[in-house]
Image (tube, rainbow, N blue to C red; front, side, top):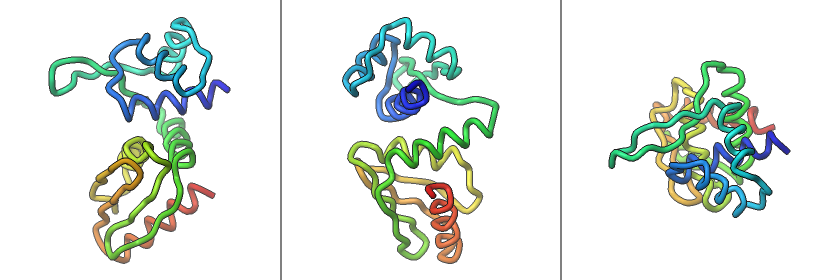
Length: 149
């Protein structure tokens, strides 16, 4: 249950500019999690969430950690949670996601830091992943298939 909640927190802070613990608790409750502010506070500490200044000078929670193995598992978990299907169009990998999950998955893909990936553009349920070459696009798709298996 806690792992699912932590995965949901990663998704929520990727999709929303979450400024406070109370706001995060409200979002979690909206997703069906029965949480208190104390639970959210504990999750924030355990996940080592930090605050980052936004373009308009406000602050939002962000997720990062120095432990790359833990991060890799979290990113793959986010990919699995929102993935629907994917296909290659020359050097673009087009990924369909659950509605509202594209931003979270794109952030996870960017964080995985594959050398072949130039960058991602995400809408509501679709991500365009720009790859350096047509051949590498197929390789990246195969890597994602392995991760999602």
